[in-house]
Length: 126
Image (cartoon, rainbow, N blue to C red; front, side, top):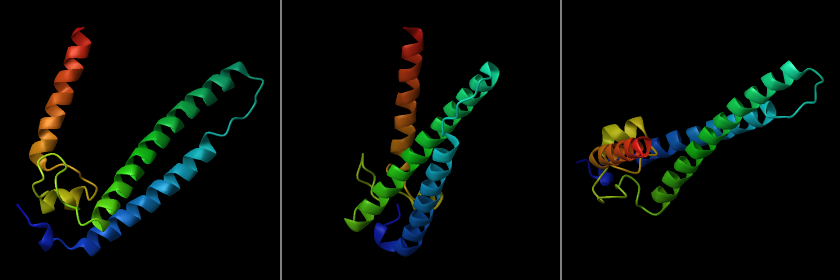
């Protein structure tokens, strides 16, 4: 595992700040898309409702991503960045290069995804 001491935190911080700004811009753009307009056409009302639903999903995604990025920046300030929240081992540099906001190492992430997948299968079977 890569020690967090060997990580170039300035590069990760810059990437996180850039992604946070992108998320905030996405949220602002989506807010404009969600504006409710009155129209007499029933068909147009349905189309606008569908557009708003898609926009709301985009907003939720951007907001979730922004929370993850802000959490990573907070961990960086507390000198906890790059440490897996589950096993407390170092998160690999390749993983952080791909996802600077990652909270789990690859092994713990794979376990979480397997558990999530088996939970979804159980819910479908019920």
